[in-house]
Length: 456
View 1 (cartoon, one colour):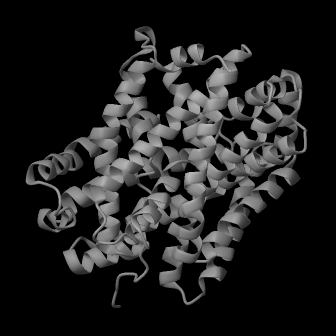
View 2 (spheres, helix red, strand yellow):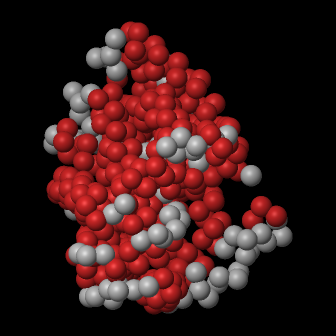
């Protein structure tokens, strides 16, 4: 079978960056990073994070984009192109299959959680979150979690929005939508930062996020910072490889990676500055994760002047961040299916959305009717994990780290140095040598260390 590169390319570097940044920036940038930093050494955590971003994440990001542009197809198709043109082993195709499985599983629970943001956006617009206290806020969230119908409805709406964009193709769909969504996300975030600075307790928030705390700092925290820097970019599951496949040869890989990494870290830090001044202004607990977003913040917005306006804006921000990621993740899956079947892209997008919805029911029911179903409870490691917990563990703790290691091995060892150098021909020999050494040695060792820690 003859394998040719896709003729589809991003029309401009801005369109490519909008897609790459949209892929990297997701819900976890908003609800996870700053809390983890504040609870694990503050400024020291952020310092390690920035160092890891420079010496681990950016080299890995360059590697994944480089592989994608070299192949010019889906992840599976790229492995076939590299086997034909560069002589890599035929077994690399299994990485492609692993990546496709990973994005399918990830979307199954990501779209459920993203649906919560749509539900809360509707509630906030309709006035359902006005003047809520802690008890009412907890009750509202519990009501959502115990309602399979509401969870399925919001999941379905989010999947339809995602599939509609992907069905239109790279230029008419992804490019047209993401070139507005991604900048819009930053505009809304900056608006929320301004509101938080004016109406919240900025000093307490900055202390929580940035003041170094040696008592909380440890070797485990270093690994957490490395993991946060690496996995927040989404390296490993082939999403950025697919985005790179549509990248023109004249676009700078290094410049692109620097911009994407800076945007990803910038959103995480700005989100903390937008959220925690509000939290501390009302003496609320800065708990991380869904509790911060769906239980703590509604209490603050319900009591703050202008909360009826900025509450909906905040949940719109969350929904936009989720959508920019889900669009590029689904594109990774549909691009492969489009190469391997004769079905039209709209049909493939619809079928993918349907399959993701069905598997996503495992996540939906894990919060209510199957909450007590722990299928692997006989194993201590999985004793408390629902079906959602198991799928999340497989994707986050196994497939993503394994994918990250394989990306580094592919670029650093399987492809020849000359072949890789040809993709980075605008970089000096010195900088190329530094990057190449980092990808060959430091990146796989660092990711493997995080992988082993997270595994247990």
